[in-house]
Structure formats: structure tokens, C-alpha cells
Image (cartoon, rainbow, N blue to C red; front, top):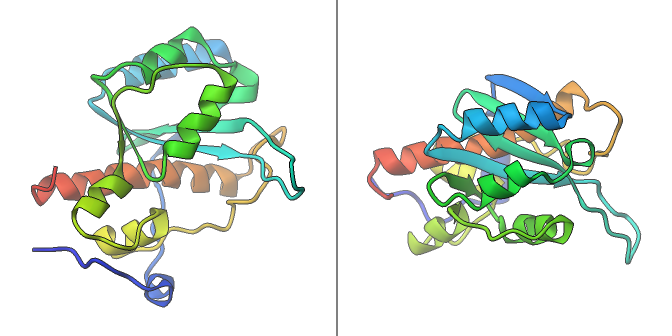
Length: 194
């Protein structure tokens, strides 16, 4: 069965919401990060995304505040301002054996490289896969609609990711954004597209 190549914003808006229901771990220390990356290094595929405090002033720029790494059942929310960009994190991003799956990840990688240089290996952007399938509508919301017939909430997108504590809504939003990449990958593999 082929996937449709286009979905309108109105169609996406009419779909049922989908969100991550697994275990969410907020990582705030180097020790927690080391343990999380050790667990994730056993995986073949990991969902990937980042969140940055929004800027509402021209010329204002913030470094990424959060890195989300997900399996199908677990999500690690790495609070980069608290953990620092460790050698273990560099090694994880430079490990080509572990496939980091994301959507629209070029800017995420570029912004992370401003914090600390690394060679991004093993990254796969699902937008590029969709484009090869002649899908003209790309991005998280469109691909979720096309591949999963569901909608992801974007209500927390412009919230403050540098807050002292993340809210439950922020955690759920951030976890869903990286986990949804794993769900889309799963269906693409099942249908023989990857």
C-alpha cells in the first residue's frame, strides 16, 4: 500500500491526537547522562529531537536547552544546560552504528555543534525519506498524519525550555516529538520502505 503524498492542515487538524505513553526520564546530572547513554547505546535506532528556548526578539539567540532521545518505550530528556555537552554525548552522536532518527534535524545538529563540535554520524532525517517517496508535505505534523493517521500537539513548542522544572505538558510534548520518529520508522520498515 502506498502512502498519500499530501495532507492539508485542515485534514491534520481533524485527526486524533497521539502522544508518548512510555517512561520519561529527565536527565540533569552527568552521572544520569552517562547511565542513559549507556542504555541507549544498546539500541539500533533512537528517536532524536531538540528543544530551544524561543526567541521573540530579532538577533536574540539561545543554545538548545533539551535533547530528546527515545526508544519505543522510553524517552530521555537531557537538560543540556545542567549536564553539559559531555564526551559521552559526543561519542554517542559520532557512533554511526546507532541510527539517530529525526525530522527536520539539520538545524538541530547545527545548533548543537555551536555548543560543542562533533561529527554527526548515523543520523537519518525522515523528511529526506518522505521526499524520496514523492511526499510533498514534510515536517512532524504532516508526516505523523500521512504515516500514522494521527496528529501531534504543538501546544508547548514555544514554552520556556530553560525553566527550573519542566512541566508535565512539556515532558509529554518533548517525549512525543522524538518518539514519533520511532513510530514512523517502524511503519516504514514494516512496509518495506527502509
